[in-house]
Length: 455
Image 1 (cartoon, rainbow, N blue to C red):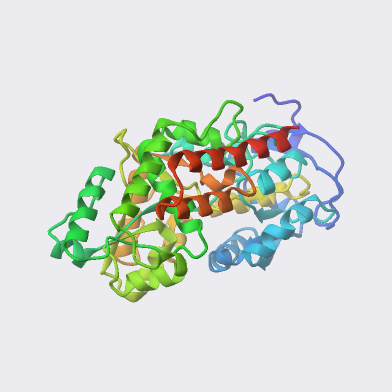
Image 2: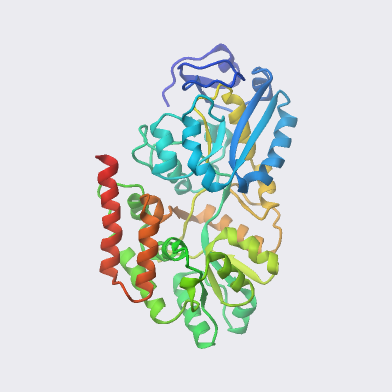
């Protein structure tokens, strides 16, 4: 990286100044524009944070992070006793509706949750609201043992018009990959092992159907469980991950019309014809489907790892979770390193913000995530699970980190893609739409947005 000049303090503690723009005094609460941005080469020290004086670190977060933050803030304030952490908790929809304006305002939070995609992260990068954190990740060794593909959804070019490459502008602490849940007792009754590949899943579904079981539980009244989750998993099994990510990211020559994607769509239609999904799925919500699955209706359930804690609450030993190997032989899953955390480019106390992020993403803090049945983005060796369900998820995540690849969510491609995918997948599964029609519908949505986005 190019570095310009060193300040005396920076030289002493491994920080290099790379940009100097207008800012205000630390702790003043007024952040009128991007402040001095310093690139670190080693972790921030307690002494460095102490030099800021008594300051307040303002954090905005999704409600799902509240329990984690309770533990983190206590540990952080004990370590950095000159910093008071002021946390604002918001519901997801509220956060997504306000975070861009907040980060663009004169009193932006120092650290905030955001979201992948053009609407949130892309807008903030384009507006110069976020501090790149490549140096933070390198200095703290956060990327050690993690697949490079997990960072792709956090990378953007400088003007926020293209993601998938460039600087890293965010990082999450817990992953939530899409995978396959299985009912342990039903597999045993059917004489089946835990599937490891799409081929083994196919065999298991046929056996389950022949045995009078519901092969796959599904609730699709909101459409995204089928159009985003189930279809995403199938596409991962057949399509080139790099090509899919390029399409999601809006690459100039990308297309949804590929042999791998067509194979996945044909497989989804075939599963519909064979009756592999629970009857009445269109009128059932995702939560109701998880409840039905927990009560024993279904051998398998396809969805995010976050459903594991709900199933474990029903019976901690009845269910397990696994990822699937694609035709390439590697684990490929929809997901990322979780909901991203960002540092404001306007923060006048960036060392404190960096230390906060560094502590959150440290191996030492991983167990705190795990204690809430989450999957830390870290080396999971030695991390203790909350039960057998959670252990199966930790094992899956460890295998993914060691020998796998992340693919983004298909609906990140455009603001309207979730609706297009959901409606189309529902029609395809019901035999009311052809593969050609589905591909044309999705690619048309994508092309229209690229024209609008790029002018």
